[in-house]
Image 1 (cartoon, rainbow, N blue to C red):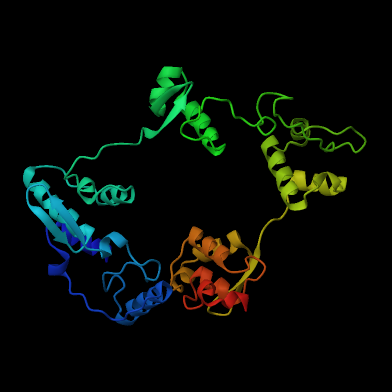
Image 2: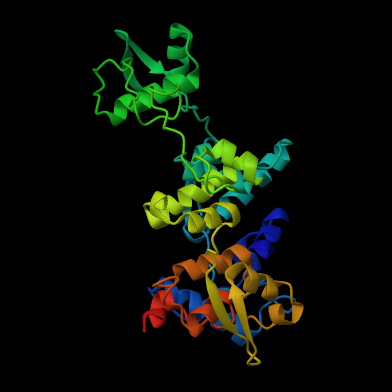
Amino acid sequence: MAEAIRAVHAQGGSFDAAFTVEVLAETADPDQARQLERAWIARLGTAAPHGFNLMPGGSSLGGPCNAMPVAVMHPSRGLLNFPSLMDAVAAIDADRAVAGVAPLSLSGVYARRDLGWTIEQALELTPHRDRRGERVPFRWHGRTYQSLRELAAAEGLRVDTARSKLSRARRAGCAATDDMAADRRCKGTHRTGGVGRGRLPPLSLPHPTDPDADDVNAGVFARLSGVPKATVLTRYQRLRRDVLDPDGLRRATLLAALLHGLDRRVVISLTLPDGQVLRGGVREVVRRVLDNPNLDRQRPERLGFSAIRRRLRCVPGWPEKLTPKAIEWAFGFRPDANPVRTGDAAA
């Protein structure tokens, strides 16, 4: 539908002249509004190629800028009222076309409004002052500065260094009248500067091949085992998070985790409309559904890889309390079984 509206505006038309709006249902509940949208698209058969709807609906409620009327103070034509921001952009683009000026970027106008620009500034009717380099005045070595670039030029610092110092000072509770130049780095928490200046001691890991040999650090372990050092460190940190005391594990268990990793998959079972059950890790099952055109066409909601994983993580009690209906909803087979709204997954 949005593509059709943009096409009308690109041809110089307006929404009111090209479309007739009829209220089919009303609700104040956003979740129910999404369900109604999906139901009416299916009931009226307005999905492409028979209508304007490219998606089955129910994913969003549309952009707020399109749904709200806007008032624009034009520098030469006075106050202008438009039913939506998209209509305002179309009208301004018509004037720009007459003047031989390139049209506005609709997404750029939306982005400017999100950044707090006025409607006239977003439509380039009035100039906008770029204040990204300005900050609340702050003191540094007894002098007051307005921007990081000004400070960096005066002190001979890199801009990112000045930004880090200023951020530490503000996190420490410094007021605008305090001097921000003091070194507030927390010694003992940083991993730079060598032993004795915040660097953590090297890991002590069992020898990967000789049970009688002394412990080795991560670099030696990686060289002897052939596992990249970054992988060794990542697997060890996961053990610290999951086991809390990896050094207390038996040597065989610790070596197995460092050399081969742990099976961290969440195993799910998806029941298909024909009764077939797909079982495996989340990635595996999602790929089997998306790579099968027949299965993909059976889903009322054509969700992609990231959307399915995000839905699964939204299920209450993930991953221990996944129910069959919740999994079918996450994959788009059961749009009516939303556990986030109904609480079906907790039942």
